[in-house]
Length: 406
Ligand code: ADP
Ligand code: ASP
Ligand code: MG
Image (cartoon, rainbow, N blue to C red; front, side, top):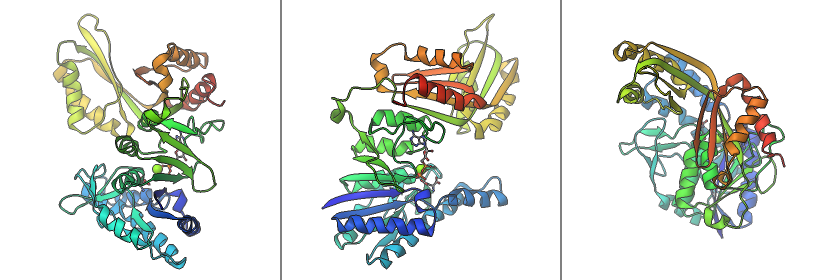
């Protein structure tokens, strides 16, 4: 009898009809001999609605209470899905993260899973129950409710699969697999039959929200057999593969394109250039828990240099404030900022063995009159910062230039 963890995202449980449809499928699969653990998200839109309620009360809600609040969305879904399963004759049990001891650290809103108590899950499975677990949430050592970051139900599912040593973890969503790029932006994007875990990790961390980055990290660490599929139509979806299984596969040059819209860029100009400048500028940003992404320091001219870096757009105003207080101390000239930028990345393990990939990217963007503001590369990706209004065109033209539709 195979043991499977299935995760259903917001749209897949977005209405009572959808929850009933999920329950029908689960009963069907159980009848075919699968032991099932199900992880669900909040109904679509619910997490945003809850965040909106908090913001109506205060712009600075307590991080602890935010997690108490947003974790309720998933609690609604586990109860409704369990009721739908009861109606179909299964003695399903629902559990919040705390109830199955999904122990995390205590970093509210981006907690990391440390341990899961598999015993309770196993006991239910042995009794023929379908186990329904709330995604996205856990509990810290003091019993505080924590959440795992947006999209965190993916991570719950993969972590549960690792903890119970499942034969497969299936992530059901509103697209039928992982595509060469977001199919909502490029309609000719192609579904991939498989993708290596390292490429998926890059795509996720560079903005493809189809899987939360941490879920891919977990999958890689524990080699969890992981598949992404549609909850709306039948199909094989996309399998995440681990290097050893994949040796025979001829790696394509580029596997996918990812992008992130909500970025901002700041430049501090005319800083007297001496050892410690980057630390003096970026230290206070990091102390404010703001994630700096791409960084460029210009070659200095006449002893003065410029430092440019990108941050999430939500942190833009806070960053401007911090730099304002630094300008005088550093003896710098001024600050410039732009919060209408986006990051676009091409990803592929094939890049390791082929040169000219970055150049082809730059030429394609130039041919389409898209200015590159910053560049950053690693072994299997090239990222560029462009004007946000040019992003869709940039993605489309690169998708075509690298022949991803075929
Ligand atoms: P869920 O609510 O099921 O967790 P998400 O909205 O978090 O679903 O993730 C699915 C969405 O991810 C898709 O609707 C799609 O727009 C987006 N997406 C971005 N990049 C990709 C990609 N490369 N392949 C598939 N989907 C992608
Ligand atoms: N409900 C949470 C969110 O909207 C977690 C998830 O859906 O994975 O981010
Ligand atoms: Mg998601």
